[in-house]
Length: 207
Image 1 (cartoon, rainbow, N blue to C red):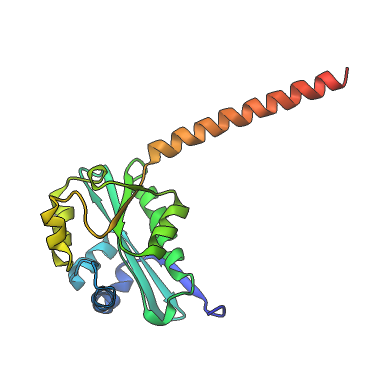
Image 2: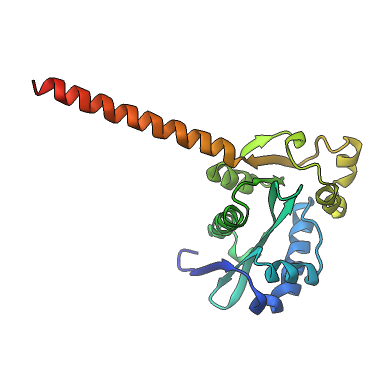
C-alpha cells in the first residue's frame, strides 16, 4: 500500500469513459455496507464532470475512487456525495485524499455555503471531523426535497420516512464557514493580545 501513487484531481469531460464503472462501484459499495449510497446513472455522473463538480482518483492509469458535490437550498448548502474507493485500494488513505479534494472544491465553488453529509461510515466521520465538520441533527441540514429524494434508493429509506426526516441510521455532519470565520477572528485577536503582552513584558524587563 505504501508504494501506491495516487493522483486525485477535479474530473472533466476527458473522464466520461469512467462513468459506468463509477456507477458499478457505487452500487457494489452500497450492497456491501447494506446502507445508502444513492444509485446514480452514468449520465448523472458525466454531468457532474461537465460542471467541474466531481473528484476522480487514479492509481497509475487505473480508476481508484470518486466523489461529487451537489448544491441545495439555493446554494446555501453543499454536500459531498457518492464517495467510493475501489476495494483493492481501501485502507490506503485514498478516501481521505478524495474527501479533502472534494472539500477544497466545495469551498472554492461555494465559499459561503454550509457543507454537510450524512453517512454510516466511521472512517468518513473521522475524516469529516478532521476537516472541521460537527455532528448535527437532521433539522440543521437542507430542507430541499430534491436532496432527500436521493435517499429513496437507500435500503433504509423507510426509516427516514417513518421519522419524518428527523433521523435515520446515518449520522449528519456539518461544516459552517460562518462559524469557522468567527473562530479565526477570535484566534487572530487572541494572537494580537499575546504579542502585545510579550512586547509589554519585554519592554518592562529591559528597563
